[in-house]
Length: 115
Image (cartoon, rainbow, N blue to C red):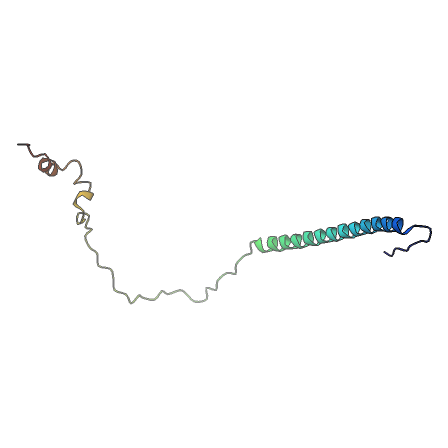
């Protein structure tokens, strides 16, 4: 936009009228740029959403080839030797439920008569 100064206007009035027109033109240009950026951003987001939705579609996997039968190989590790579970070998004697409230040996030792 080109602003041309006319001879009938005084310098101060032409500056104020031109500056008002320049400000309005600048604001309209900024508004157009903002709208273009918003449209571009919206298009980019829609494209990203479209690609994400395309990736999320479940696809069938290929069927494996069963041309040879599967024969598992024998393990080289030794067999596990079974052992008796040791529930009573706890290091903490008071931790077992059998040595809790119903163990009368501890209660008699704790209740010595006072002399």
